Image (cartoon, rainbow, N blue to C red):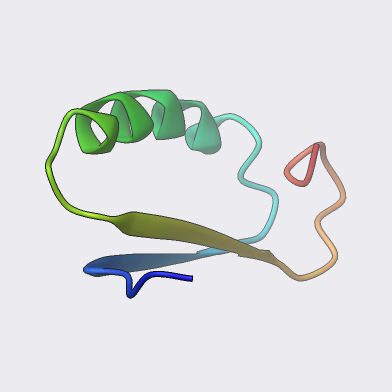
Amino acid sequence: MSECFLSIVIPAYNEEKRLQTMRKICTYLSNQKFSYEIIIVDDGSLDNTCT
């Protein structure tokens, strides 16, 4: 496994609607020349945050 240049950790609780912006972030990052990871931490959301 290669070393990751950028790690983004996002705490999420009932953030289903807001996490849709993750597509824009992923599109931007996928066009960069560095490795990255996005970790979304869900702690018992009652909506569809984790789907």
